[in-house]
Image (tube, rainbow, N blue to C red; front, side, top):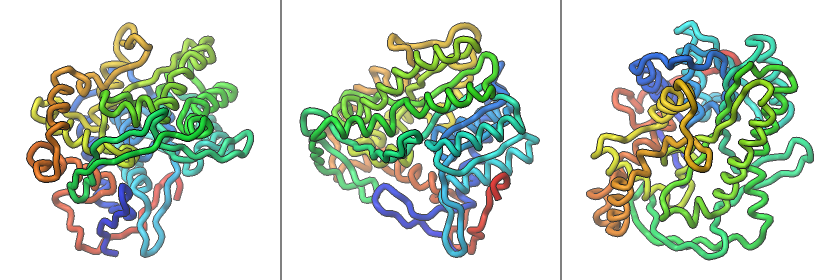
Length: 398
């Protein structure tokens, strides 16, 4: 079939297997160019492994540390005349590249919140790897069905206490406008968001993995978070998502205690603002990122997900000595984003941003390209008018 992008808001409804394969290969090439991760992990479980930071974590550990990887995700395979999701094609390309490199790679497709998928994952690890020495938790979902109670929770993206009004942009059209978001009306919305995006499921995973004996001595586990600048605080850091991220951070000492007898350690890594399927859904963030990209690219310090993950594993998690943490006990690979000179310039541009000058003062084109890259589109060298085989399978799944 001929596969073209079809969008609905911040979602692309189609994905291109050749373009997603190029996206994966570009990341692999970057990791290879940086050499090996000294004393890196060798057997890795990535929960939420098919897109964004999770995919880049899998690529960075596999091709930077020759690690065997197990990836868990929830993606839709292709059907005749209908494309699979980007994450499905990403995984197909990753597994093919891993096989060519002689690396073990296996994947499980299903609801990572469920006990059933946890058990399938544990059985696979027992059968093929024995134990894992790194567990990456990178789930991004708007809904969660609790595995113990069966209660379904949905997260909300809202400020707490006061309405929020500020600029936003439709990144497809480049139109800058004001947006107002009403605050949560009750504590239930906050609790539901914490239930979906907080640390409970991360804890459930580590408890089940430990009970099954599949965590290696000295195991590390890391989950991902974001803080951002003060201009996004009302909708993010101080909003419902921020409460969930606070719960994620509060899970770290619980996991440290759980892993103590294995001499294991849990971490939260605060990452840079990047174009992902999740971030594209958050009002204000696309405008902020388009301005941030402009500033960071001009300063020569811009990073994508693979650069972030390569730096996390090489310069933070697997360095000699103690892992560098901030005053709140978090790893910070958003340090370049949050530099004073960067934020000062972004703030100045934010105040100036209008529909008329956006192309000039921001990198909205770069934002748009990165959004479509997530789904395999807008890559040079790929003929998007050519007939393409949509029926690409993931080797370990079929």
